[in-house]
Image (cartoon, rainbow, N blue to C red; front, side, top):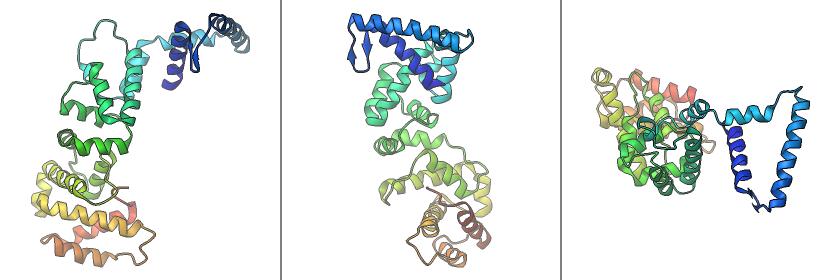
Length: 278
């Protein structure tokens, strides 16, 4: 629906400005386009039994409530949502700007964020940028990963937006990596992500941590063990898969004072559900 309305509005703009996707239109070409549009509209009326689909779509394209819903369902948080709208503001125009900014971000993240700020859509604040990223699903995850690696202040605020309360550790880790994609190779950035996740997971589950006797360092070890187990069990290149007994033994050597049953449940989760960072 959003893309269809976008095309209607864009076509209106092109006709008003005398442009086509291929370049400028001559006045004669514009007249022909208008004549064809009238002819096509008449034909549509006949085909639809008298229903004027063109004007129906045109009315929908100018429906501010519809554009507001499209904006907020695609970009869940923008700083401009919580401000008094500027003069000449419309959600239709905002949708076009958000779409343009997302495409810009997916080509160059810094330019994309600067575009949003220049249009007054986002405030120049790590917390606001983090909320925007958390509530948006149109951003390219590879570009987003590069951006977060460079903007650790935004990454910090993004991590705090996650609520892992009462979640089983591997399930929480999957949710985390769905929002903040893991790098393809081990390195400093992966270690940073796991460290931040471990502290956040413990902060969300203080009672569970006391009950199990776990610290952020112990959760960090468990997360690495889960990632390695995920690779072991899902990779076609690993012929001899790690057994549950081996996983329990290796994990309890690295993180002492963890119950055998708890580690066994971790293994079962990966075996049945799959990779934590896929």
